[in-house]
Each structure stands twice: as structure tokens, then as C-alpha cells.
Length: 124
Image 1 (cartoon, rainbow, N blue to C red):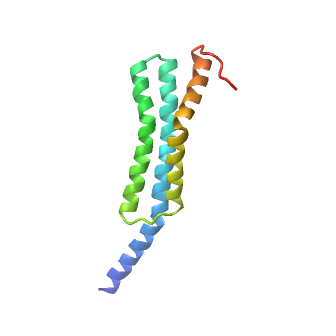
Image 2: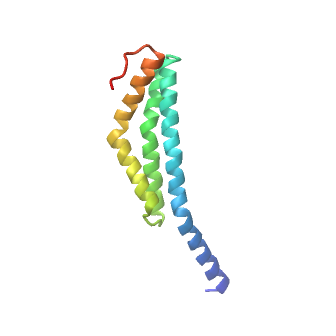
Image 3: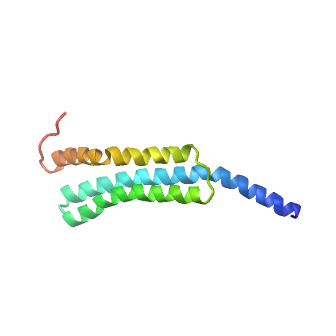
């Protein structure tokens, strides 16, 4: 191969290795922010504006954020990314969301209903 082509391939491979973590990490950050935006939007629409159908759509979007993160991680690994700390963190995030997501949404729902819709006080 030509020396310049080899050098360009080496630089591309090095930059690819450098970008693996930030890409998955950025996707994870975007998914975490999106989860909270969808959850808070759902609560506001349900209890302040009292629009049930839109509220249900926003509630369904919260778990879909996890699917987006899972797909982004799988695509990154399929394209040759090596499993590193960012993939570990994405797996932990998805596992936490599957295990505690329902409980977290109920926790927020009870408190928001109490504060804005006259619901019963949350148990301590």
C-alpha cells in the first residue's frame, strides 16, 4: 500500500477507537435527559393540562428511550467498537431502568399527583 494511504488508515482507526466511548456515552446522556423530559412532560400534561391521550403517548416514550440506547450500543459494537466502560455503563443504565423504571415512574407520579392534583400524600 502507499505510505500515505497506510498513514490515513492508521489515523482513521485511531480516531475511530477514540470516538467509540464518546458516541455511546453521548447517546447515554441524551437518553437519560430524554427519559426525564418525557416523564416530566407526561406528568405536566396529565395533571396540569388533563390531556389523557397525549399523556399516555409521552409515558410510552420513556421506555422507548431505553430501546434507542440499546440499539445505539448494538450498532456501535456491530460496527467494530470494542466493549469498554461506556458500554458497561449503558448496560447498567438499561438494567437499572428495567429493574426500577416502573417504581421510579410511580414514585414521581404519586408526588406530582399530590402536589398538583390534590392526590393523597405519598407514604414515607
